[in-house]
Length: 367
Image: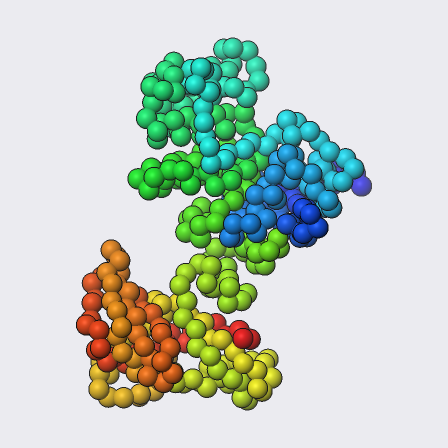
């Protein structure tokens, strides 16, 4: 291979690549054959419930946890396998965790420039540059106790980015912030990291945060990545019922396949590829259960888009701030289904209503 082609290959390599990582504790695989890559300027989110292996994966990339198998590459170069290991301090990887604690005895300038190499003047110049980006340059000679909580978080952000890490690892970094601060600091963080062209691997258990921040989501469960892709694709093309439920409340209809169709009180649903007699779950989100206000009292009339209407009785209705949640007990089997309605809609308990389902928003999985 000539030098030109070798250089282009390195240039095309992901900023971070993880291959087949495995980590076990007391005989249990906490991380089980995890592979992913993150390009420069990209945010990839490891999303999943507590205990699924997200943080352990992050610690192995950082170098503070050793894998049992697998390899880690930065810009196409091996930094760690089970034999060779670049020390954590030489990996050019930044870390941001839940606790952003600043050094109380150091000034804001010294906090921000803590990991920066160079002369005292160069460190101060980099601190000024970073503090200007988070609108705190005027506090460069202040001390942490003189700042508000939100200001301290922004100083910690500047400190994490100041050494120009090629990769930023973030483990639930915004969970300790109140709602008033979280969105603003989260957006500032993303803008700053993208400006620095860092590859970001973010761990969270909050789907909303992942959808808001990530260019790509890797959904983890039981130590494995069960689905990976752009947020829209992961949300609209879930691999199984649990993947749907992780992002939102769900409704479920139970049916049996006959002739590649599943028969329900809402009409037939396509079940291609499933043999006759297979029990299936038809899963859909509350926003896709529609109340048919034009059909009151007319009975189950079919429509091309939404199938057949089924009758439900209102059990409870609650206003949630930007939408209303209405719970129905269905006539056909006594099951409970939920519908979300924009704005305020609070029908009385006992009211009979006809319901349809957005058929193109339903997912059919083997039960």
